[in-house]
Image 1 (cartoon, rainbow, N blue to C red):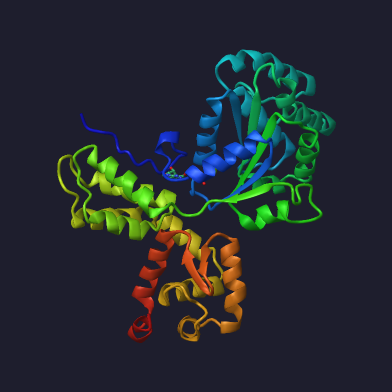
Image 2 (cartoon, rainbow, N blue to C red):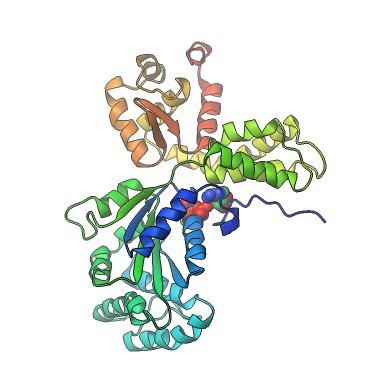
Amino acid sequence: MRRMNPFPYQRPILPEQVIDRDVEVQKLLSWCDSAMLVRLDAPRRYGKTSLVRKVFHEAGKHGTVGVLCDLKGVLTLSDVITRLGRSYAQLRGPLEKMLRPVLTSIELEFNVSFMGAGAGAKLGARPGNEEAALFALLDLPQRFAGKGWQAVIVCFDEFQDVLAVPAADDKLRSAIQHHSDGCAYIFAGSEPRLMNALFSDKRRAFWNQAEPLELGPLAPADVAEYVTAQFAADGRDVGPVLRLVLSTAQGHPQRTMYLCSKLWERSQPREPVTIEAWQAALDAAKLQEEHALDAEWRSLSGSAQRVLRAVTLNGGRPFQKQAAEAVGVPIGSVDRVSDALVGAYMLRQTGKGEFAFVDPMLELYVRDLAGSSLPESEADDS
Ligand SMILES: Nc1ncnc2c1ncn2[C@@H]1O[C@H](COP(=O)(O)OP(=O)(O)O)[C@@H](O)[C@H]1O
Ligand SMILES: [Mg+2]
């Protein structure tokens, strides 16, 4: 029987598919065990949600319940309530029976709706009601502590989006600060600038409140082991192509799986993986991402584009005079621009004055652009 493509790249993955991250899982488990608040930062598609789900899976073995509340795109308090209510409504097993009547009563009592077809904002809901509904939902971990569950981990995913809802962080904070031992919180986010606004600004409710954890790229040895094993399980020998995959994906979790998936589609059971297959896979990957990368590139300021170009030209060191000059950016502004790019998770700092692209596909894109438009002499400077 043909095996399914073992490299999913569009959604959070299953716990057993998670490469590396053992240290992070252990840390999160122990922090959650102590009912701490945790701030989890990583670029989008770096595996935050997958990691949280793995933590839930592990903690679940000891009776802890994980509640995953995705705040992506919330605009109103009513959105936040809907998302949180739905997260509880989606819990399965014995809890379902216990929670359903409670959730229904919250819906009725506060005139909100998060279950069933009519879920979503209710026009005309009084603001006072909304706040009370939010508090009632946030109070569920306490309410059933020791009755329905031993402990609860609530994860607010894409937490930075809560900034769009005025004072929502104040409300969340004031509701959860009274919580005692049984509940831990993970705030996952993919925009450092906004996450800093929430956690590193003295004027905000969550200032200095959470233990920080940041995800880095995947360890090459772990990626090598996983990828080799997946191909080998089907008699496909990935051989020397493995090196190309690793050096191209640079430990970016989603890019690793994405490139492997394209390679898988171009290889056969019981056959070695060829360099030609790799080249075709890479071309297909670039083509599929072209629109998204175009849009990302166009959304950048001219100076950001120039600094990114300088990073590709000069082995990751945009500060060298020659690199800055080659792309026409004043050397004095490289600092500010590269800081902003790091803060936006476009670049990551790898050493003093040295940077790497967070997304290796964006780097290839910028290199391809440079290759097609820069005169020979400048390309030679690299
Ligand atoms: N630890 C990992 N091992 C393997 N693949 C991963 C890992 N983390 C993320 N991925 C890949 O990245 C994709 C996006 O993961 P996801 O958890 O949704 O990221 P995020 O929540 O940070 O945006 C997954 O579909 C998978 O291909
Ligand atoms: Mg996610």
